[in-house]
Amino acid sequence: MKRLGVVVLGVVLLLVGIALLVLPGPGLLLVLAGLITLASEFPKLERYVDPVRDRAMKAAEDSVASPLRLAVSAAAGLALVAAGVVWGLVRWLPLAGWSTGTSLILSGLFLLGLLAWSWRHVRARSAEPKSHG
Image (cartoon, rainbow, N blue to C red; front, side, top):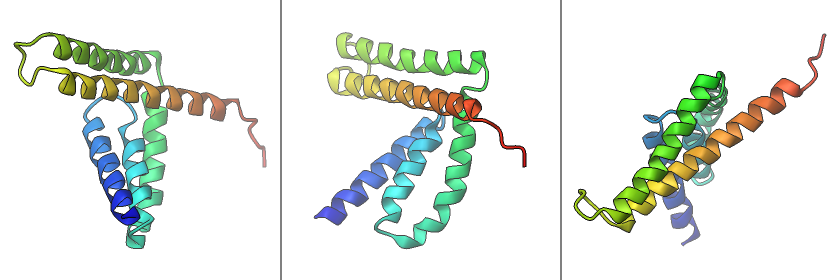
């Protein structure tokens, strides 16, 4: 039962991460989380973790590399939250209702959370003293 839960969690993280790849923001971080989760049950997947980790960290840095990118990513997250509220309230929209609205709101909040993590991570790395050696 535990293994099934880990596999389901890993697949969900991986699929949501892939979906977030089309949005501005650090979607690869979620792909990485899914891959790490699945690798705990399927050791052959471990060989993909480091390359994805490297790309995810680079994507996280790129998503907050400039004020414009940061603003666009934050606007996308806020737009998802707003769309979720609209989908929850407006009954004539396709797939209207709070189940769709909630998933949009959670996606937006998740995107904003990943964006905040990326921003803090990049700021912390830039504040580290550089070694001259």
